[in-house]
Length: 348
Image (cartoon, rainbow, N blue to C red; front, side):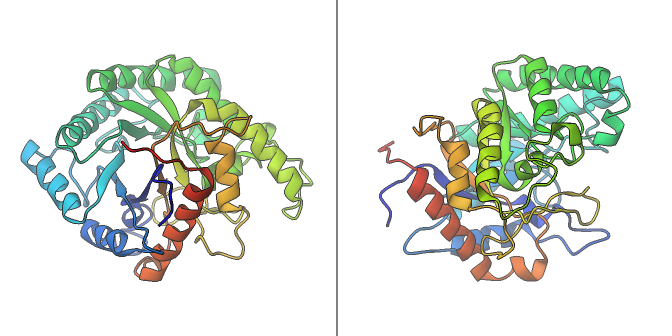
């Protein structure tokens, strides 16, 4: 067993849903995701918990308090805890954060529902953090029709959502992913966060998605790496990661460990975004453990300790891959190495 016990190591439930369903492969049931997570083991290390998306068919955000307790009891039965949760802010139940007044009202209402579930899970003792993940529920093309005006609308919606979340003791983490308008480049992400101007707004960094911030996907003017960049140039990549994390690390309150091969990918109804690759993928462009350190350590090399758990996000893997236990063992091994290099011991 490794000495470090923080950050806690979590898997995610939503890869069983995202990119699945109509037009793609069948959804993987929530119970199956729990079973695969709980069964993973590497040198005596196991996953400590799971991050959960509050959307059907895994879980209905409209569930009663009794339903929320059943969720907590089910996760606890696998000796897991619950970490960050994802609010189901997309249409048809939610709406675009820069849409009509009705759409934006629906967005905020979905955040309220998610925060109710989140607080209940904390009070039940199954969840120790207080992060709820959101995005803008719109695409870069729509945003680009009026960048300034749409950013103001997104910020206003996020601000209202933050005020609601604060009433429940929750923080909101805006997902850094190139498929979300107003969040699709590192500069637009910072502009949006600054415009929200609330103490409980932060950034959710995912190594697979933020890698494409470096290349300026969907916002070429904001690329950090030069146009003639070659993946073989590791020193240039590291300098790019330093620039990116220097800007976004102060905002980061939620962190996903992941791998990317430098391409975009989408399945089902999910827009193309940074491709999640297996931890062992030979085409992966990241040194997972080392590059996680750019997010988890300050400029002087000290640990930020800004996140007390880290999560693996493996969206849009084929079901055949996700149903192999070795897949999750390999992922856990990568997570263990991240904690070995950038973790700490805490008796709490």
